[in-house]
Length: 322
Image (cartoon, rainbow, N blue to C red; front, side, top):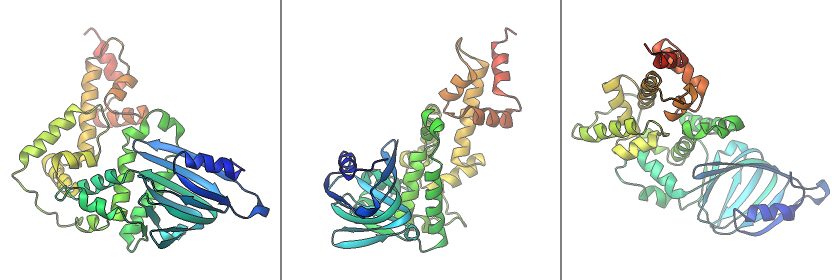
């Protein structure tokens, strides 16, 4: 925890160019507690601090702010935004801004707006590309949920952020295996562009265009060739140019399951084959990790549910001379 505003200014300046930072409430003292987590192209910062005034310069990195307690007033591009826990989230495009806060507990998500635009375009099915979304991401926006669906998205985002307090899972590479970065980008894209969900209702599915059968076949082959790497829905959308909804329909019609369920089944089968034909130094853990399973206990449970036997038993069978 920092108790000196100058030290805090030096820390913030390393990530965000500052014009100035002033602590408020001298009689009450000053404090700032902070933790940082990096998820691929995302940088997440969780902090709690006493009142301050901050002036930040232009940066190419966009930022999303969520307040959990307290309040802040942010001014940029001649607009003022009041951030409260009940006010959803604030998107800042990377332009210079000023912020005056009271006591504040917040989470900041630093991201590349181009990557967010690519994610939005993938959810939309890739018909128009990321440019229309990127243009809209040049403007600041206070997102206040106007429907139950948007409120559920915001709640899911907050709950997902809460689950990231798992040092052992992070150290084991579990965040990457679970696709947390992609999940956060998709949640932010849907919150900033809610029409993406309204354009794809859950009922009365739209027919999937048939002439693009080869694109779906190519997608399946690519997924089978990359079972050892994290694969996200956004990657599937980008490679196939199918929307999320159409992918769900295609996999349900072809295999009777969702894309991620099919992917897990392929990984389990590939792991089973590796257990039946192990290398000399193979273990259950090494085979699980090689096929994209970061959580060994989860792998064992899923394997037993599918095949009725633990992976250790299959490995013993594979090593048996008979």
